[in-house]
Image 1: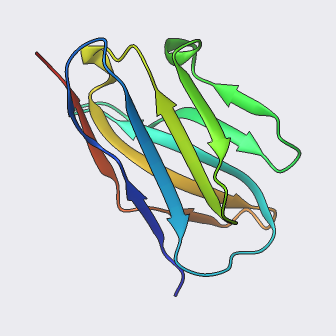
Image 2: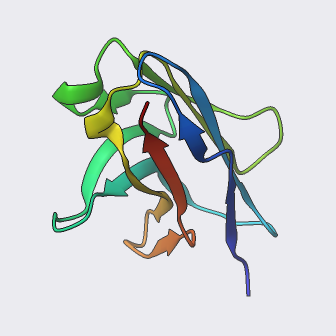
Length: 116
């Protein structure tokens, strides 16, 4: 079964940067959009950023101007560049591939901690 594998999380100081990557372990077809969600302790999972097949992007208001989502160089990969990180960005970040059939693939999550 195809899985999404995330990398790039970790501990960073406020104002720092991290780059998250997500790659599928095999071929996935009919992807409508690739995105990143996050879930902080005690909060619901929320959309951080997404990029559709035509290349349209969507960002949560809280990360606009600081985060950038893009497709990776390899097929079925997506990257989230996070700059000017704030303590409130601390969460587990999940990669998502949403298919035209409405099926969703999810990664296992990668933890991002922003703290001095």
